[in-house]
Image 1 (tube, one colour):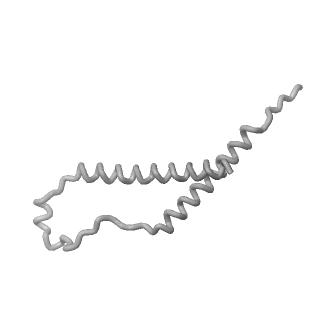
Image 2 (cartoon, one colour):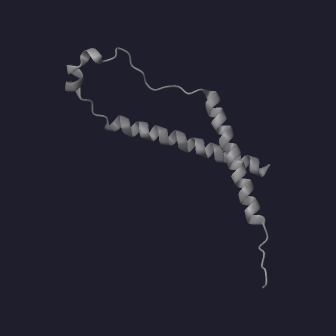
Image 3 (cartoon, helix red, strand yellow):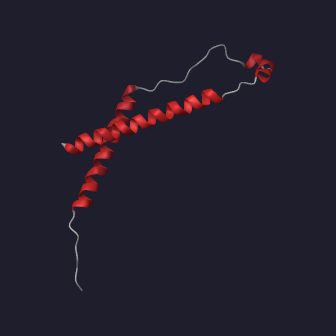
Length: 93
């Protein structure tokens, strides 16, 4: 049961890091954006008349990635536990 909670915690940490990185990149892009008004004015007929602020990903997708991350974290924890609990073999020649 302990490995289950640790793998869920690992999946939560991975997703928090992902969302924090995505928000940080978006923030930096927003702060450093400098529009070129003269170039946009010359090609005004090509400008769209609607604005889109990103896209939306399905919650089912995020649920699947969370489950996959939890499974991978669980497998890594089980593998790490098996490697660290094996007794050291000292063979004498």
